[in-house]
Image 1 (cartoon, rainbow, N blue to C red):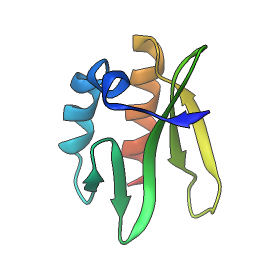
Image 2 (cartoon, rainbow, N blue to C red):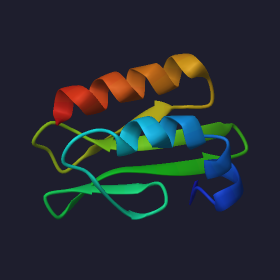
Image 3 (cartoon, one colour):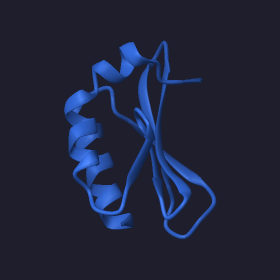
Image 4 (cartoon, helix red, strand yellow):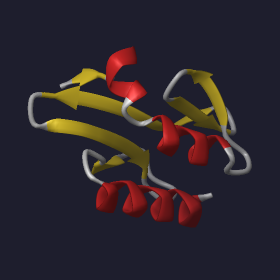
Length: 84
């Protein structure tokens, strides 16, 4: 699974705008967000769809969200808010 290219991120622009509005995040490159100097959220693409990896609460692991559809995007935003 590769990191999302510009064309894939174009499909997520509304979601990216909502993420950019969250407090405490820095977008180091388009679609790659850091919090307190640590990777927090980034996106992947593959033939099955678009995915987001969100850092777990206090963990080194990331949780994967399928953001191909609106339900997954809403779940990602909710989880990101909870983890901030």
